Image 1 (cartoon, rainbow, N blue to C red):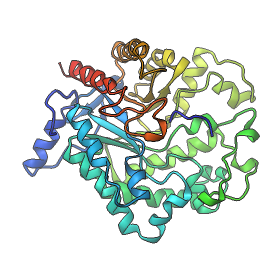
Image 2 (tube, rainbow, N blue to C red):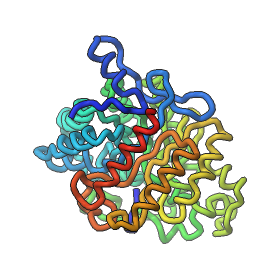
Image 3 (cartoon, rainbow, N blue to C red):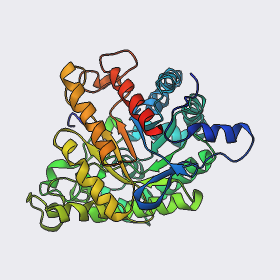
Image 4 (cartoon, helix red, strand yellow):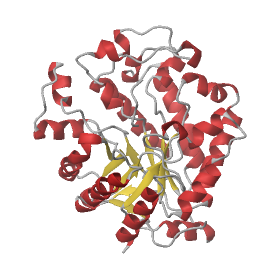
Length: 384
């Protein structure tokens, strides 16, 4: 997630989306979503898939906060009409206080999630739910420090397994679910040389812990443990859909952060090592996010993914000044990079998210609406 720090089904779809719907209409088992193909490719309905979608970050959060807010229906309608194949979204509350409904009225909580998933189904838009977007949320709910993401016997892991089981089994047969993702950019908080300055914030009114300590500083070892446990729990219930960690592009000094707690710049081999580290089996979909200088590193990430034989998901990307004419060429150049490097999946940041109107928000009618048309055209080319 880029931080300011603190109508019908379409035909030209590169992922054969209509096939899943035809199967559903015929009463046969729908497609189980995206699966790993040979040599780092992605398959849907047994056929190669390449697609660029959007991040629809707040589609569930809004209805979680306000039960009468079903604006996601109009949003998915726009995406369907613009032939946008899928959306990545935050599939829990962001802050602990936003999980109160889950703890007090679980039936109502899942009813609201049902609304999002069924709307995506109606408009032919796939979904990649990111189950634990904000890394402090579950430990704070469990009353534990962040280091308990590294303890499979912790209350944090118990909550994680419970939520995964309920989410995955509830939507296992939905043709909308393309893949499962753990969270958002956990790697950026790992093994920082100045970690004490970057502990999670304390906002007691939002349900966080009342204080933080060194135990709230993430390490790569902690996060890799959490990723393995999450993916193993997914596989208990869903044998085939792709599983992703949700990481950003590795920091330019990620290897040295981990090994030496320094800001020394990594070599290409060390960069590739960190890409591999953050996709432990059974995670089978690599994740990077691309903004600013990292837009130029997507080729390196694609090369590392090819060597690992795992597909790459550019889970977020966006260019500066995307609402201005000068932003069009960088945007189109990045789409061309995705095509040249044969990146299977990518998602632009961010659709229908008012709090980021100034810098990133895309709607069907604002000054960034042209980006949806650019994505439609890219996806049509892949279909051909």
